[in-house]
Length: 171
Image 1 (cartoon, one colour):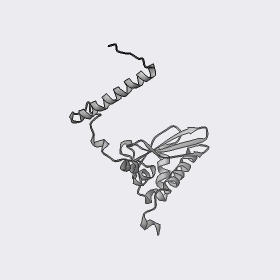
Image 2 (cartoon, helix red, strand yellow; image 1 turned 60 degrees about the vertical axis):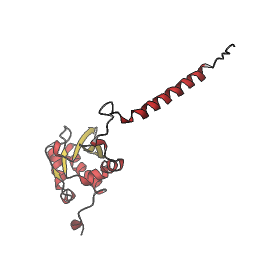
Image 3 (tube, one colour; image 1 turned 90 degrees about the vertical axis):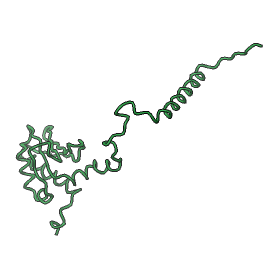
Image 4 (cartoon, helix red, strand yellow; image 1 turned 180 degrees about the vertical axis):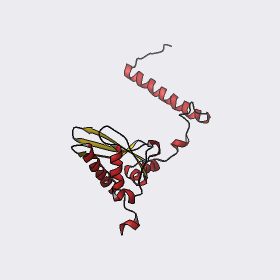
């Protein structure tokens, strides 16, 4: 009795081998269920236990702006940080929202950073814990003093969109 051989095209043979490899891998993973994870990254951790809904709610820029209490202004060569702090603290909304200026970046809920291109002063407000950019904006000014005043008004204007005044202040 003679065995008859036949040949498969290469792409069909490769497809059969790939299917067998995937099936073997799936079987190996189902039997590994009782074994400990290979590394710490395979194990569930407490920091990963937060749900997507909770993470999305707390990392949303409007939630960050509502929850913030302490603001740090990063020093830079374009604007005097102390002058911007003065202008922010002088605005009535800033005190009504009970926001305070801090000198320690590590204790801040929000960090204001400023860059300059020509006459454009571009600012960002970032939550340092999550690195989420909560607010960005731009003002056009001839110098740093004018820019500081305009930036302070722009920051309050953008925060006013998501933050209401306390109920006793609204009357």
